[in-house]
Image 1: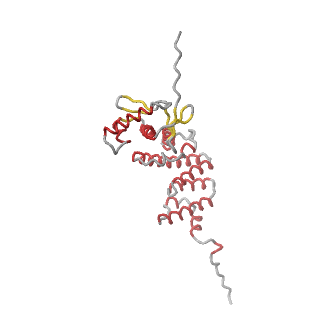
Image 2: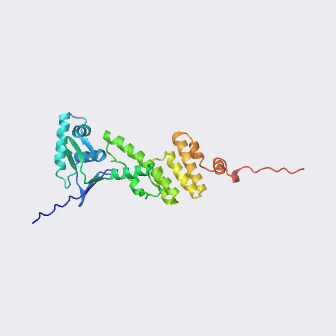
Image 3: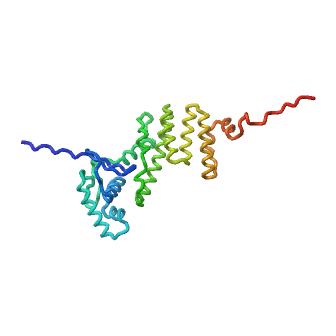
Length: 260
């Protein structure tokens, strides 16, 4: 008789945008704090030497103490329902069966912003690009650079998504992506350019002027500067001029003197 085939382990999902969460086939898996930090680090870096991991996660203790803390953390991780961390000699890595939401986001964003993206390719859903901040509330130094890198990638990807939807005539989706970008970074001029572009593509000149003027007031209040010539140049000349002067109804009427 043949031995029964071993059942493949259930896949796990590691979520780092928003609150930390490790999910297995049967739902969420409880992970203590130190184990969360190890999984998050490997989720962002994939592979790393033990010494680097220990020194990064426990920077304020001796090397011996840090290595001991790492061994304890690895031992505790073996007790969870899914073996999330593997080792190859001195190298630790995230197990192959663990997918990471950051990886999905990064692949979609880079494909969207890269020159190799085909115009006919399916565009990623807005929800994939508009997820929450990377591990909010975590103040470890190794998180800061990754958080900013992903924030900038998200902003560029949302602008690219808006531009591609605009070219395809999907103006509602384009506007949603552009306004999401504005909500993340209200002072980012390129995001406001994307909003104005969508309005102009729909021939909604008044909406474009209204958005431009609102951003102009925001820049003045926050930074004391004007929008760039690039953004100002997007507004039709006459509309731009009328937006900066009094309305015709409020202007002093022209005098026509009658002869005595």
